[in-house]
Image 1: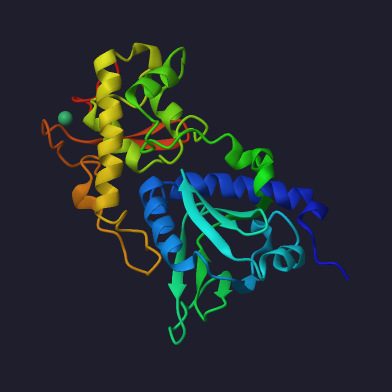
Image 2: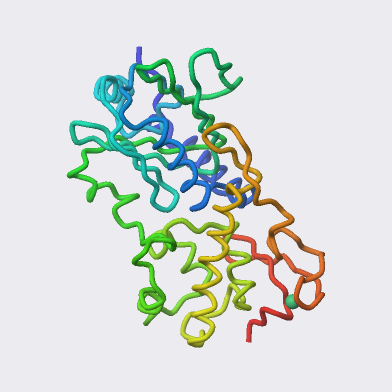
Amino acid sequence: MHAVNSCECPILESYLITMFISLSYVVQGLDMELPELTILSKQMKKELVGKQIAKVRVDNPKCLNMPFEHFQRIVVGKTVKSVESKGKWLFIKLNSNYVLLFNPGMGVDIVYFKLGDKLPEKFQIQFNLQNETGFTVRVWWFCYLHLVLEDRLSEHKQTAKLGRAPLDKDFTLNYFNDLLSGKRGNIKNFMLDQKNIAGIGNVYIQDTLFNARIHPQRKIPSLTETEIKDLYKSMQSVLEKSIKLGGLAYEKDFYGNKGGYGKQHFKIAYKPGLPCPNCQAIIKKIKTGSTSSFICPNCQPLD
Ligand SMILES: [Zn+2]
């Protein structure tokens, strides 16, 4: 007896993919971006490094890049060497040259537990460590949990082409200028493409563009030197501020605590109908391709 495999039912599969794409437009927004992943990876590093994996459970094996039995056989007994984040991905390095790559998709709760703690009511993934600690993962929609060999990371399509993260030391203003040089598309689409810049999504992009007074649909060649400089500064300050406040108020950290960066810290993001904090014009919500944007039509003119 074989379990029903998605490949056996192409019509259903394409229907589900269409459903997923349309739904993802609706819920797209408050998922984890660079600040949340940066905070999470630091906390995970503190609790997990040096610990051996004793047991693993995965109820949604589609997130894996191999059969669960194979995954389990490799992972159990390995020790966590380091935890880092790049953009929207966590890189959990294990001994024997393995790396666990985790992407939270449209949102997850990754929560640490120790002996005696009550586990969350719902979760799909659980890692138990040798010292009676571990973590659970509740996946809201989908996630990726891929196991790859460290020396073959360059073959992992989703992470190999990730751009630099905006808070990396080598992401300088000169680098940003070089990145934009010769590009033709809209600035917002460009900045959300993880191959260009790793870690910014539809939450932090809103105020990043607003602070620099740039409409999301401005073409890259139309941006002045000053605008690019303002955009660079704004991108860094928005992300740094959120990290300082513990990330988004809608996301939990590794200890189950919500972040402090809430609606009161957004300038125009997710505030349609309210007055612009600079000029009092009414903030508008507009469609920009597959994403929604919030703009002040006065501060961020298109022409
Ligand atoms: Zn305004």
